Image (tube, rainbow, N blue to C red):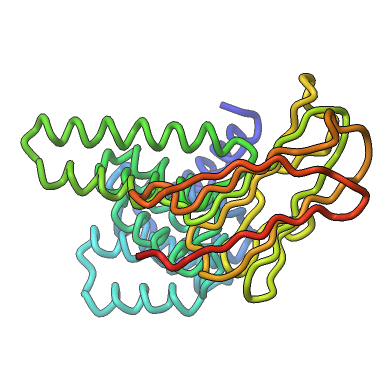
Amino acid sequence: MTPVRSAVSLRAKKLLADVFKDGSPAASDWDQVFQAEEFSSEVMADVLLQLHQKELYDNAVDCLLAALRNDHAQPWIYDVLAIEMKLAKRPALEIERALQSRTDFAGGDPRQQMITAAMLARFDAGDQAMAVLRRVVAVAPETSDAWLQARSIADKFQSPVDQVWARCGIIRHVWTDDFEKEHAEANQTIAKIAEKMQRAGAVKEASQAREDLMEASKIDLRIVVEWIGQADLDLIVDEPNGQQCNFKRRLTPNGGRLIRVSNGVEANSGRHREEYICRVAPAGNYKARLRFVYGKVVNGSALVQITHHEGRPTAKSTRTVVPLTREDAEVPVLVEPVR
């Protein structure tokens, strides 16, 4: 246990000892605690987790309601309140009111909702946690951390459907610096889950998992630029509706993104690569521009590989050697509608 975690645990235990010193506390005892001092979100979470694990659900409800009455609200508090109310067999109307208050309080802030999902997972409410994260990525699909958190929670509760869904989301939307590792793990795990389903006789579910993986892996357009030498080039992609993807704007509203950017010096071998993808590319005329920044490129040229409809039967790829000058080298790219 880290020093910070130890301090949180000690403060939570002291709070509980003070409240329970005369036996089971009344609601007013919790009010006195929260009126006397402020507690961090971590301490409150620890207190509630201890009450939950001891099955003191009514006490947990009283604690949460007192926190709300005394301005100690947290993003996760209404979701946990609804769980504890249900376990304490409180009226359905009270539970519904708590959930409605959650919506009013947290709004659509993805980070607050991710905190809520983490808290729900700690309280063994896996389905509710996943429901929160599904709402997050429905509104903000490019929130990489939400997909990674969904994978972690799905793995904790061993929910195959959620495990596949989270990993398909990672393949589609997670393009952090270690995306290759994350994508490889996603592919391997989905394959294992599908195989396990198949062996268990869940043929339809196994087929669906494999189909979901294939769909997540489809990319309408991929442009790769490679060169050798101690030199820096910039890949710039003009999209048909006037959007431009470049090193300053690595994600466009169309979903086009630069997933690799080289500064020309980091590769010991002298081999460099920049890469653009657009998973669902609008049909039309694109333009890949190669901008020479500095240095010396071997043979004075770069290799441009363009792949259309990756992951589909209609996939095709072309490779072109492009001479470099002080002016931008341009490679036209036509994306036709997917049939």
